[in-house]
Image 1 (tube, rainbow, N blue to C red):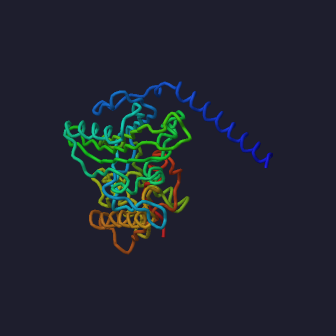
Image 2: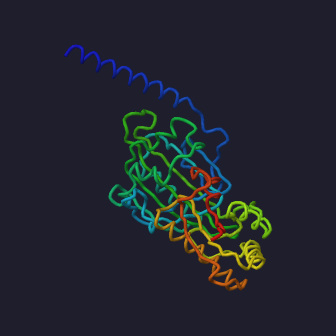
Image 3: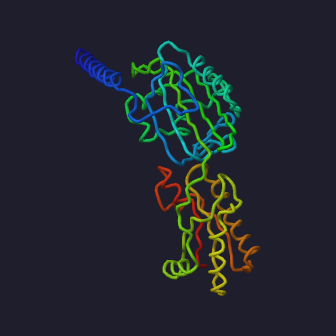
Length: 340
């Protein structure tokens, strides 16, 4: 018994020392270097910016209803809207002795005053029943750039009293979308965040992706297909969650048509690919529909015989890069022409 007590005391001493060291380090950290508030949305007075990330083009999920997890552990897709554009992520720690509701109401009023239209909001554990720590990690996985200090890693360690809203603002230079998540940390492990309100603010400015992928000409397609049996194309564009080809796709479609007219005996599969955002079945269906859109355009606009073309959807199962960041995901979103 005496030996067990000694072990327990030692464990408590080690834990206390580690906690004190963490707290001292966290408390001494200044705001994130290079971080700045989003110009359109001011911070709650006295808040500290403890996490920051800015990307020229990214995808963000907006919740439009109570979110449930399916059997595969992924969020139900009908409750989520994905928006793309310039993404700014800010994580604030509010001043002590402020309630999550007070902070949330201040943000809500500020957004309303600036003309934002609320798409969905909820407050409290029952109304926001899907906003536990696990769902937070699925929807808003911290990025490496955001986790640049200890506080940003534990701000929502044990989230309670959650409040959420998704809102958009229409403006001439492009729509702005906002995801706002406010909760108080009830965890006991980290004194710096215990009973403190944290605010996660994601802002997406509608901005077209820079089209840096060069259109592959018919001669290059023919060469790649002869060498490997396939060619990957990045010049076929679709809006998020849509299967209709955008006008910017015309040059690449024309080159595919030129290839097929130059080789009248060539039959191909048109294969759609997605990144891993979203659930499996949905991505399989989306990639199939996108492939069919390409086939339909080749038939209607370029006179290619239907029997020479077969659409197929590979979804997320054949990535060519990591899906851990937007650079990799953009490479995985593609259409391939594969020789039959």
